[in-house]
Structure formats: C-alpha cells, structure tokens
Length: 130
Image (cartoon, rainbow, N blue to C red; front, side, top):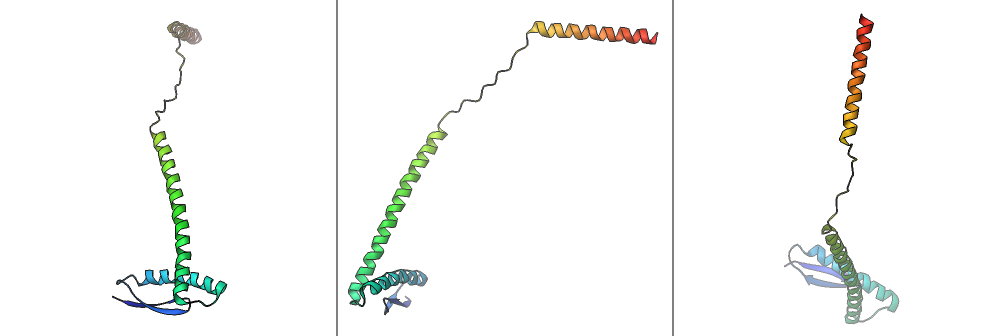
C-alpha cells in the first residue's frame, strides 16, 4: 500500500491508500486544504483536530448542497422523461387531405370535346392537304 504525504492547513500528514488511488487522495486533500485555508484566513491558527473537523464540516455542507441539487435535477429529469413517455403514447392522427372527385359526366364531356377537337383538327389538315 503506497504512503502519500498530504498537506492540510500547513500541516503534513502521512496517509496510506490503495495502489493507483494516489491522485484521488491528492485531489481530496486539496479540497480539504482549501477549506482549511479559508478557516485559517478567517480564524487564524487553531488546533489540528478542530481545523480538520471544521474543514470537514464545510466540505460536508458543500457536498450536501450538491446532493440536493442532484436530487432536484433527477426529479426534473424524471418529470421530463414521464412527459416524453406520455408523448410517445399519444396517437397522432394522420393529416387528412381531401381530393375532390370529378364526376364521371364531366370526364365524359371532356373526352367528347377532345374527340371533336381532334376530328376538327383532322378535317382542317385534310382540307389543307387537298
């Protein structure tokens, strides 16, 4: 088990950790040291145990606040997912498009007119040729 030296509030501590977790330990120690520095700036020098306790409590307060925010975000996410699921279950009616139907008598009339026009065109061609 590796031994790591960390500095908190200007004091050195030897701490053991699992292999490969040294960087996590240093990051956690930095967070605790930052809180201890705030306390030291505000209160001045204090006993080691009190400094560690107060710095730990400050970090715990921040952690609790972050956990509350995470809970709120998770609740909001659950609401949005429920809304989305509700929308997935909505049956969307396809858009109805009405196409007018041309009565058969109109079709028949147009076909008759086309036939007459063709006959007239043929008659004009025949007269022009002959």
